[in-house]
Image (cartoon, rainbow, N blue to C red; front, top):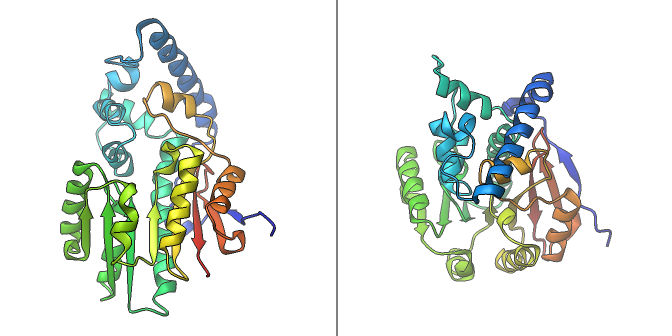
Amino acid sequence: MENKIPIKVDDNLDLGYEKTAGLVYYFLFLPVMFFTTAWVALKKLLFGSELKINAFWFDGLSPACHEIKENATTWRALDIIYNYLPPKNFSLSERVTYFWNNLSSVRATRNRLKLAKYCLRKEIERLLNNSSEVRIISVASGSAQGVIDIMKEFKEKNINIKAKFLDLDKTALEHSKKLAEQAGIKDKIIFVNKSAKHLEEIAKEFRPQIIEVVGFIMYRPDERVIKLIERIYRILPRDGILLISQDNHVIEKFFLYYVANWPLIFRSPKKFTELLIKGGFNPKNCKIVYEPLKMHGIAICRKTI
């Protein structure tokens, strides 16, 4: 078996991906980012890692950036990033927020949401060729904004999509309940306040055709990721789908670590491929798609036996 998974970069114009800021990025964003990262790293070396304000021109002047830093790695920080809209009238704090929300890593995170929704939609459509309904489990679901948006789309077409949202954070589930209620699909979702350790138990009677794991494995070491993928492989039925995301190495990773207080495990496409294959998936039945900035990849893996 050739251990290669096809890798492509999606550039679907219909999805409205955000692109890099071009020369502005290299001549403005990068110098400021590098200086800020060095400054905060020095402060943490001298005064410890628990700083009230990491950088005045980041989380000092911008309430939104401060909230992202304080909630880093959680659904709340992602919710702010996903739903950021430039204000019509720029105050100083709004200008600072706008500046940092245009870093490539932040743009790529919003791109990931668009790509994840696109991939989920396509897989649901494919499964509906042989099934009257589709059942989804979202692992470490967070706000589950993307899944809810897609479920709403299918409800408007009178197509039955059911889901279980699994998350250890009660506030994440409460927020997703509100989003689901606003979308009119709350009755189609079961909210489970448990960790991924309970995945087999949760999946047993539900029998999911799709298991979605977006924004989770970059907080887990390789061995735990492999075990999770192995478990998902065993749970999925024949023709079942795993949708799973992983962050590629990015130039802004030290900024994320020191300034945004957001530690992540970055993996190359090759390493991502290795984890999927060690988890039990045949590379012939997998593909990895990156958003245009090549920072976030989503693997679509199908179980065929």
